[in-house]
Length: 185
Image (tube, rainbow, N blue to C red; front, side, top):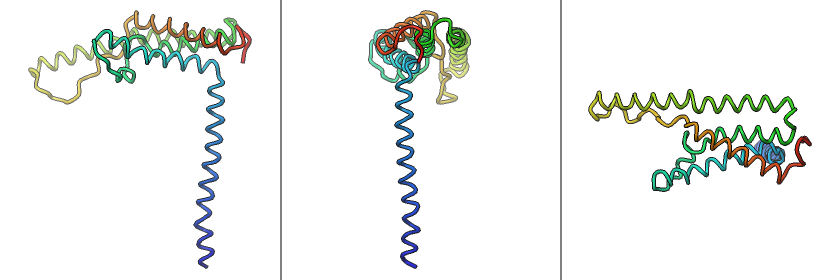
């Protein structure tokens, strides 16, 4: 009976080890698939370049280094714009401008850019006004520890910079790693 109990305890351990081996293999395959997807990598590197550039533009603007801006919304350049324009550039380069994927991606990019300069920016401006009203109303006394987030959207220049960065990174990446314009996957 003791031997049966020991075998019963080993079975879940073996099952767990087997599951881990399968998951590791699946993860490895997934990472290989993603890193081999040129369009995805164009958008990823465009986004990452924009996030890193935010540290430098914030340091120039504020005179101090603050790495937290990489994890904040807003700022120069727009990383959302850079990501979607990198995606659109990758699709255009890999599948051609005549591909049905290109206008779909272009429309998606335009919606993201419009949202960044429109709705999100105005929400940030409204948060700024509401914070000022609360400060005036309560004469600097805190009614809450948290203020409304004021930097939500982007200026048109920040979106333009993100778009230019996305096109640049997309073209450079596809030129370096792609098979040529309109060649496909």
